[in-house]
Image 1 (cartoon, rainbow, N blue to C red):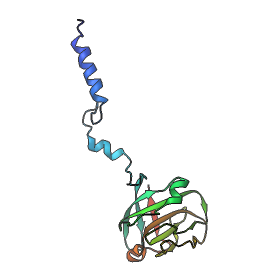
Image 2: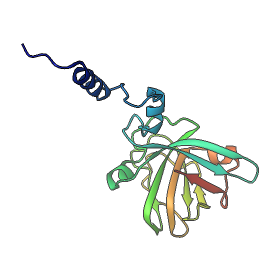
Image 3: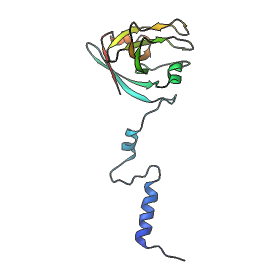
Image 4: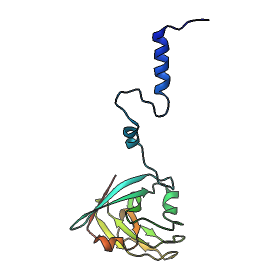
Length: 167
């Protein structure tokens, strides 16, 4: 039987332990620190990010799902039966455009907020009708759409001209 020198055996043990999930080679690094850098995913598997809306008198915070791909944007909040008051979904567009949304297969009413590239709110379609096939349009080319629970924009005093920021 061949003997491995202690220094080599110790190095091998440290190397293999640092490659295991939950083990860290750097001193002071913890699982909590590592989780902070990970992207949070919603139950639907979409990335979630913090979003805030600055109104004339308050800053309102949300956590929103990001619908980035065409398929994610086409599905949106369809088939969802509820949305928490501090949640929503954001639809970023690569280029500004007049946005057209509908409520096909959307079970819950929503406030649809149209946002310009500079982050200001262009307009709000409040309390949209579930299952409606009628288009809900922005009034001008916009960069992003935010959907939140119906009535929340009015409840929080969110209005055109307010500023939306998100990561």
